[in-house]
Amino acid sequence: MATMNDLSSQQFYHGTKADLKLGDLIEPGYNSNYGQRKKAVYVYLTATLDAAIWGAELALGEAPGRIYIVEPTGTIADDPNLTDKKYPGNPTKSYRSQDPLRVIGEVTDWKGHSPQELKAMKDRLEQLRQLGVEAIED
Image (cartoon, rainbow, N blue to C red; front, side):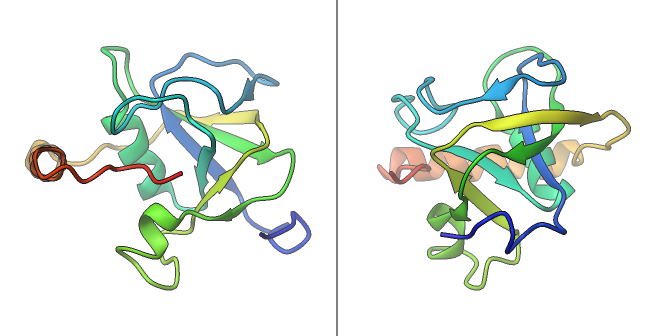
């Protein structure tokens, strides 16, 4: 687990399709956007805009993707869904927390991935689903 003092110089993002306001809290306990959609034990955040864009683009729902600048309210840890399995060393700077994230801003001028990149990612996620591979590990 990392403390905020360890990562105090980082700016963190959360990609979603939820319409949130400054000061809102993003908390665990809601149905996940991924896997079997069970109640999420963690909330996810990243220090890279690209990872947040993927979150916004892949989140369920028809609303437009949103990217929020967030502030963890407690400890955060490397996201093992990415760091241990796909990207050793956490180059995506992806984290998770059991404590809420506070919305402190919104990025409104981001550019999404190309339709081809988005389709390739969705196709890969569908292949994994058919193989029974869960996207989220608790």
